[in-house]
Image (cartoon, rainbow, N blue to C red; front, side, top):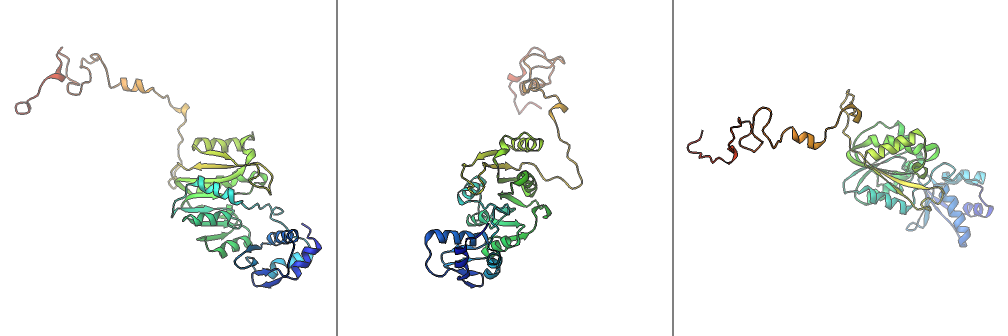
Length: 312
């Protein structure tokens, strides 16, 4: 994104102190909004209580390329779309978080979801590929652990009760990321993820298999408002997937039972194996609690009174 000359002039006059950048002078609203946009694209976030834009790295280094080239690479250019606050709240409400719950957020970005998770009393670990964004989360102090890595290179550890995520969408990566994230959840846990809206009508094999998995897990999908991600401009949904299976024993392969592998017997037929209203072929009386299995002699043995002092 090309930066306007008047915006560059404001940035050159700014005061830089470590990770802080303070704008000097009075700016009209429209000019300030363009300056703020450029700083935000470079990784700076306005903090009212510090009256400055704060970076996760040294502010002078963060804007050096910006001033030298007159261009800035935006989050959208990098394929990164932060989760807006209303969508974050929807994700957390569907996740049914409890205090002390262990949560994983893959592709955590700048921690919009993770920070909100921690504010509800849960324990959150983050994975983020971009080093600057990972450092930004660490600086926030709300994440127990921040791993700077590609999510697909992180060893699977089935330890979390929840995974809450906004995965990359490009090239239908959302399905791949969600399928991997499911492997990190303990039985009885829950995955809640923002996903591409086209998931509901695509007809390719991978999408159909994924939708089948949601159905088998008794999961659900919720449609987000059209403006949920203004920077993206595409339809999005929230997928909620319970994890009901148990962790596989080491070195063992599970045998899946399919309906075609056996013949289901109606419940009434099963009961008739044990209950009958007429004498059976083996000449025993009907199942009545006391006389079952006694040769039928025409008398009602179930009504016979028993004296515990005389009967064996």
